[in-house]
Image (cartoon, rainbow, N blue to C red; front, side):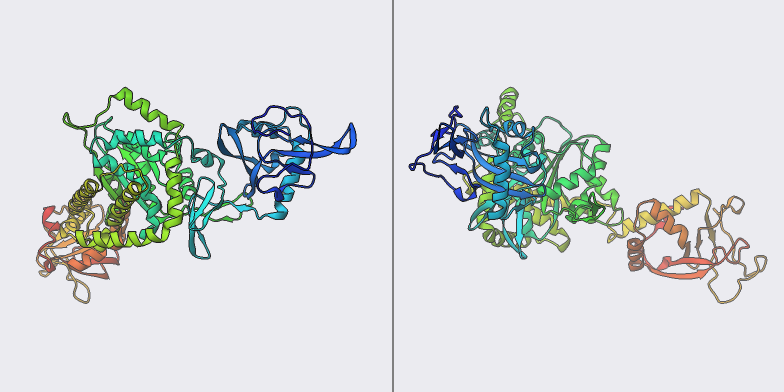
Length: 612
């Protein structure tokens, strides 16, 4: 019988009592044996001597450690298709015993016996036997796996890594399986990462460290975090750092998101990679940035939208706890805050910093052609670093939880962080802790102190940026700006009337021609009025606004009526009444819901004066 997996002969061999089996022989159907090298053969009577038996190999390659996956239904087994390297071979059950079976196996490097006619029968029988003796493995996304409400381990590289060892696991998406299947050696990653770390540039190191930070987001209690690294200049290392970061887990080219990807496909992918980082590169145009920003709030929510399966039944939406990183040529802050023009919620969900170009004195710069060659090695060598990290995470997640709590508390005290800054502090904590774990694993590439100094400096920049945002309605100047914009818009449409006072006493107002009549003041021009939306009373310092028209204007402007009214009421005496705009001037039309503001109740809000 053949003794090596790469033997080329498929001839029959006599079966003797000296044949030994290797591994899980109990998984084979009746009539098949496995030898010491893992070669599986069918046992049949010898045509020349029926009293004896011979074995006919199914393949000259070993078939070991088989398991079944559901959703989709697949058979997986280990073999040796390259010299001294074990690989996992996978085939969908619907391909077994068909003309496609040989092609599917050979595309993965597994060769059947040249003239074998029974391989299809064997694989079908093997699946039946496996179904009898083993449970199939349910498909699960990458990342953290729970069992009975408790963290069980970390899924990556076709295995569920736990404190007690590993067991097979599978993902349902064959494209992602291919993009995130560890390949080659981590030596090429260690060589490529020096392109960043040799320069002493923590802005780029933060991008690389995000690869180790993403799985730690779970221990912060948050769902989705967003980090943006931008610079006006191109070719200064952002894309290089991003590719190196992606190569920790998967294909540095195909696994990075592109602008042609739809929002639904991106969210579906995040729901399947779940705890692994997601990278966006080359956000250059205003349209590119807006497209990306539209997804930021869904990322922070931690789940994709509900959808139906092919049978029109509700399908469980994908969910995640991870870090999304973008590299762009422009700041995302303005685009994010435009989506929420009366709250800082959008700003607090993104941590952004500027990547500065290297100077003439920057150390460790490498010739562009050399850097390109070293970086290209990652195209066929990726995922090995992530595999090692996944094994460590699965075995040490309890320690990760303790470390994250300790570091987060330390940073909160050190930075005097406010409650609304929790996203920023947690993101910094994950980057720093991820860098520490990478160094402890033997990938000693990060300058942890320099990285911390840089991130805390970036936090100070974010705080200063927050203070300059016009969407912060705790600042009276921002309330004034919104109200002044509304009044200017209404005045331009000839919908504002200025009077000496506003009639608020019970009963009908004085006749317009009487001595006590409400008088229209300049700059009002009643001949050009296009309806009345705002009435300003100068002597009594009152202002009335048509509630419906104001709400419509705020909606068109993308501003929250609820939040603005809360801020306005906190700053000035404001009440809702039913009455007339222009009452006593002869211009009033009909009763309506009105917002009445006492302009004298605040010395800080002077929006009426701003439009005079």
